[in-house]
Length: 429
Image (cartoon, rainbow, N blue to C red; front, side, top):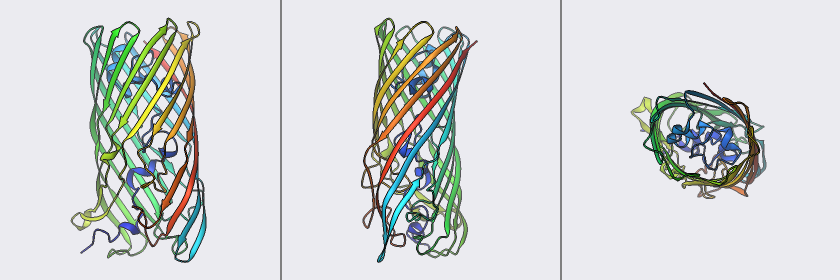
């Protein structure tokens, strides 16, 4: 009989597996989410992203904001170019041997595209569609045989989310909307089967899933110039099916490729935003966001070929994540609007569970951006963000949920920062 622990600690699934691959940890949002879904709100560190405005990209966070769309058909294309930097330096010890650790820059550059469409059916009814990549990116240390390769050799994820929406404008004060999420997730992870000093062979896991969820939201305008928006994105439960490749025999399994499956649930997200007009051409905006990362806990990876015997558990054990931002925008003239904002993000990854795949920590956002109205129905947006990572330690030692005696301890610190450039076009027929 294959024991629950049999293969677990000898595989790449050392506890960050599956979706921790994203490495948005050093970049875009707490856990492995990608926040860069709007150039317009990028310029304010996403302050006010759940309220209505010239851009319909706010429907990603609050679908009810679609009732602020222009007459007819509106199409928007947003492009975010992400340039993260993260390097882990420290030591790795196995037995009497201690090696220096230098991962090099292990987070890859990325492009994130987001597209939005709205159609005003009547003064009360609005239809919309959002196409996004809510999770993604990759990690790959410069040297595949670095001293921490037992805990991360490479990690990659691709996601795609389609979100059809129906919005209803109840009156001048209230709007509501609901939508569906059709989400695809594809994962590939690799790491050394043991400490690189002992074995360089690579284990690999890959799998994918398509599943569904929903979104909902409301906007409240108690008086002219004041708006409050509340949006909700549901959890999406994925049944990931794929394979795990073992380069050597381990825990009762011969070397080879085996079918696996696991249930993974992405977190719910609640976004509360507000917008207040201070003067005719200046507005102050803010956002508070909660993400239910603690629901991840420790999903089980099962061997499909052996009656779903448990291969291992993935002890994420994250806390919840929080995000707070404030920003403002100023209409310089009829064609140009300028924006700026700042934010603080509380990571769901604590010191006790931080891993080599996802060395996430709290971060500080500073952003600026602007819009240029080229024609009455055509606008161009730009946004820039710099993210400062806070002090981040990795301590994978006996007692840590990822620790494996065959891979040794990994102790060090991570230095990280991110630059994000974003551009978009908004067009209305």
